[in-house]
Amino acid sequence: MRRPIIAGNWKLNLTIAESRQLAQQLADSLADITDRDVVIAPVFTALTTVAGVIEKSPVQLAGQNCYPQITGAFTGEISPEFLADAGCTHVILGHSERRQLLGETDDFINQKLLKTLEAGLNPILCIGETLQEREAGQTLKVLDRQIKGGLANLTAEQMADIVIAYEPIWAIGTGKTATAEQAQQAHSFIREVVLQLFNPEVAENTRILYGGSVKPNNVDGLMAEEDIDGALVGGASLKAEDFIRIVRFAG
Ligand code: PEP
Image (cartoon, rainbow, N blue to C red):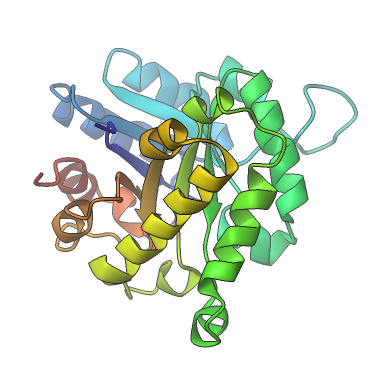
């Protein structure tokens, strides 16, 4: 059985004071959670504050990005080591906003992923197609390229620390969720590609999250699908009540 994981991507939102308040609400309300992983990704400036707030709770901390170097002359960048130093256990990599707005390539994301593993953190590798690609029947081809590029040069053992997030770009922040069937179809394909790349055990154990307008009213249907092991949540992770309900999905 794969342990579910619900991750909240706060993106470029919430001041340090606001982040502290939301983290405190989550830490208080989710203190009893033992059967699933809960991860939140605040802005970098709020990481240490939030780390202190959630320290004794089941809630874990993620960076929203990192640079594939440990230390040195990389002005404005942050490395996985420094994220770990701030209290992170996870890092979101290859989010579609970074691929689209900052031109991140599969190769660059793969370099980050390898450095993240070296630092002992768990990467959450985001992949997903645009609406144009879906309508052109390219979805599986795009996913195949992103998985193989993102997971290049990894060993089967290292896959135990990797989480994949399928996030169709047309569903992110748009209120349009993929149907549970559409998501399941993509997840099952992703597991198939992981099988080709590694082995049946890795394919069976790899956790694949769905992301794209996950809300309290659709999480249960998504989580009921065989190959959906959790959610990466943007907008709804900024509201304590909504995120708590998503973490407590029925299943
Ligand atoms: C995301 O940013 O990864 C995301 C899925 O956002 P939203 O839930 O707002 O669609």
